[in-house]
Amino acid sequence: MPGTVAKKPADAASQTPQPGQRKTLRLLPIGAGVVVLIAVQIVVTWVVMPRLAPSHAAPSDADGTLAAHAQGKVEHDADRVDLAEVAVGDFSFSNTSAVPGIIMNVDFKLTALASPSQSSILESQMRWHQERIREAINRIVRSSSYDQLTDPNLGTLKRLIRGEINQLMSGKLVSEIVINDIRILEQ
Image (cartoon, rainbow, N blue to C red):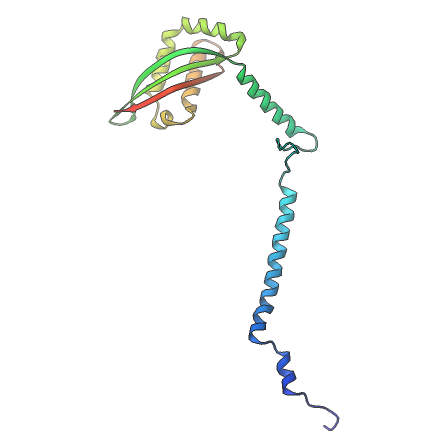
């Protein structure tokens, strides 16, 4: 055709991407997708995560119920400090059922915590029921499992001892049990 101009072969080659350019063209959308994903994660985290109060205390909400709950926790801890300590005694028992074939000697000091108004009642009841309390603690320690004896908090032992003492005294005089100077020797 007389009026058409043929395209140069160099122009056709310049329109098709080189092999190195193809990789950068493929990486560009992937990189943009990663940036968008990170931005979305930042926004979601900003919206969902609770913010700390200026004093870096407990998080608070619009009506202040969380702050009130946190203050209640502090008040509960303060009540725990106000409990009177009543010494129950020093105990030493052997446990043969925790680990078959091994005798475990358990030594500890036991203290009961009660409200200050009931501490004198608790002391007199402890003297009145001294041997029955010792027998109940003996039964609990001798029948305890290895896990109960080696628990760092001794939660199960404390709960069982508190329940037995309260049952013997026909009331809820003991609020908490404290076990100190515990030694466990395996033979």
